[in-house]
Each structure stands twice: as structure tokens, then as C-alpha cells.
Image (cartoon, rainbow, N blue to C red; front, side, top):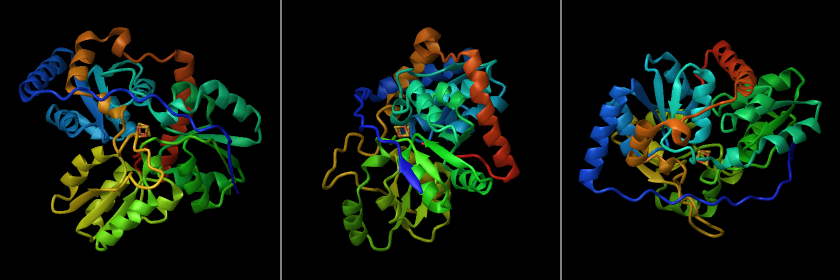
Length: 353
Ligand code: SF4
């Protein structure tokens, strides 16, 4: 059974894209960032969906490029006292929840996520209160306050396994916030799942009709889809999975041409993983298209070189992540529950957003 929380679709104001920098300014900021990282005992952790030049800089300076939990876990094991998180705000919060003793800076605290924005803590808590017979599972793409209200946090790479496990325990489930991923795990497991009606503005825009046309043009291509995409798009996939799982699929599938339905930022690491393959963006155009994101998250795009330098230079209320201690403790419980579950499964917990 799959139920949906019936809320109106919300349209979020998108931030302006950062202005492109001239080559000499890019060089200036790269140099400045490297100096600041050293001066501040900081390491840079970047998400797969940030721009390629940001991912390259993170790698070049001894940081990492990963999904949000891996970013946070890298931060836990790295000796640096400051983490510069290039991603969106919930990623900075997750890093702070797991590393309270470290300073967590972001290029901008205005880098949001439509899943996080679409699941306000109070409304969600009331929703949970009205279904007290259900266990609450939330995706990593949520605020610390929403995590603190949950029984479990989960990432896309172990979502099916966790829901299967809870179903075997006889649990009925509230799933939030992504409705497509919720629907996907419900179909895979047959569990009783009540979904919050959130969506990722990037993955929600992939279109089946245009994808069919593209497939007709490239019949030899495999289709790789992130499960935050609509179910009809997922149904066309040769491989469905989290960011890390899609990179792995790109490497192992025999096809030399791949159509990829997730944020185009992933192409940087995917192309590294399979340099000989041709990667094509899945279409976001076609009938009913809004193409507000056009396969690149506008909040991820806010993590430009200039903003990273400002984050390191200025810190403070404009750039530093603070999480209320009671909320942090509350969010830590379901986060640790997930990490323990993943360790028992001998799975590596990778792959939200
Ligand atoms: S790509 Fe989607 S899920 Fe990821 S941060 Fe952007 S809006 Fe959120």
C-alpha cells in the first residue's frame, strides 16, 4: 500500500547562478582558497553535484568528493579542525551533527534543497503525530529538526534494505520527504508506506517522452536513473541507484554510451570512473517541461570559487553551521541507527541527493 500526504506542489524561488569568472580570477581564487585552507587548518569536502572545478579543487587540496554522509564521515576521520562543506545546507548540518567539535563552514548558508524546504519541521511533526502507529523514516535531505523527529535516517543506497527490514518487523512506515523515492522503495518491498509529498526539483524534471526519443536516437545506450526521478522514468532504467551506485553502474555496465538521469555534476566523477564511455544528459525538456533546473541543482551551483573563498575568509554567522545541541542529540540517534544498520549489512552508506 502506498499513500501520499496531499500537499500542494510548492514552487521555490531559485537563487541566481553565480556570475562566470574570467580565467585569471579563477586562478586567483583557486590560489587564495588553497592558502586559506592551510592557514585555517581546513579541508574541503564537496558533493558530487557541485561544479566540476569545485570537485577538482577538493581533490587537489586533499579533500574529498562524495555524497553527504560520506562527506560527513570523511570529516570525522580527517584531522583538520575546520570542514569547508561545498554542498547544500543539510549537508553542512549533517557534518556538524557528526562532528560537533569541528568548525563547519559553507560557501553560503542560502544553499537550500527543495526536499528540505518542502518538509518544514512543525508541519511534519504534526503529520507524524497524527499517525502514531507508524515508524518515521526520513531521507538524509532534511533539516536537523526533522531528523530529530525521526526514528530512522536513511540514504538512497540502503533505503530498500531498511524498509524491507522494518516491514519484516511488522512496522508501518512514514516516509519523508521524497515522494518518488518513497514510491520506489514501496514498490520494491511491498511495505505499508505513507509518503510525504516532497520532490527534488532537479530529478522531478526528467521526462519519459523525451527520454524515449533519445533512446530511439541512441538504441545502444544504457539508461541510468536516480530514484528521486518520477516512477515512469525509473521504469525505463537499466540501472537505478544512488549517486555512488550510478557511478559504479557506469563503470560496470558493458554499454559504451550512457544516458544519465541525475544532476550533471556527477559527470565529473563518472567520467573519471569510465573515461572511454560517452555520457549523455537525460532530457528535462519536452511536453510539460518547466526546465527550471535543467539537470543542475541551482543551490549546488551557488558553491562557486568566490563564495568558497568568502566562507573561509569571513566565517561567522554568514557561513558557519550551528546546530542547537538538543536538536543535534536528537538527530544523532536516528543517524547512528542507520550507520549501525548499514554496518551490520556490511554495506557502505552512500548516496543521497
Ligand atoms: S539536487 Fe535535488 S535533492 Fe539534491 S540538493 Fe538539489 S534540490 Fe536537493
